[in-house]
Length: 217
Image 1 (cartoon, rainbow, N blue to C red):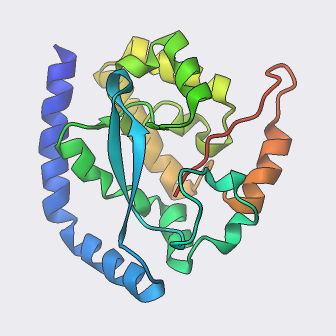
Image 2: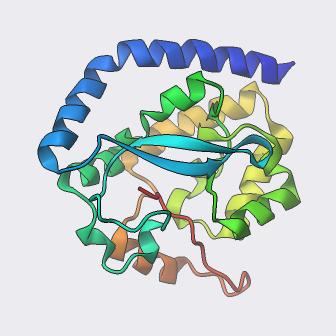
């Protein structure tokens, strides 16, 4: 029953967002076009509910010659690929706004595990262990307010699984409020060289592995 209510809320809020945020969309679109060559939107294949693939939308934050389907931290000298406008969009998370459309059409929810890249097989497999692939992916989620880019795969998947098993209005409200706080404080957002340094600091020898999760593009 809650999933039906959750979908209804997604439709109402995403439609309202598309209407009322249209002026902000227009300003950001102009800024992106003035700042660098290329399309306004960045499209990427992601994994959603029950591991179904869909195309996620973001405002483009990187140059058009950036290697495709490669997490930011795996790029050589990633800072040189991020545009000036892109740095602002990533820091404020405004690059995620176009996903309101993904929510409206039912490919995503407002709250849920962040959709993995189609080739992040290790993350997808880890999520399978906890049932995290069996709930709608989201714009933000439990893992996002508990570490975002800095989380190792095992920890991220476990948090996503915790959300999947406790999915409720209470959990969604906690994620929503936590996201507002995280965005304001820019918690867990690390790019380029900073991400590499962060990974070294946050490496847990017990896990024997480091994250390959990044903000993407």
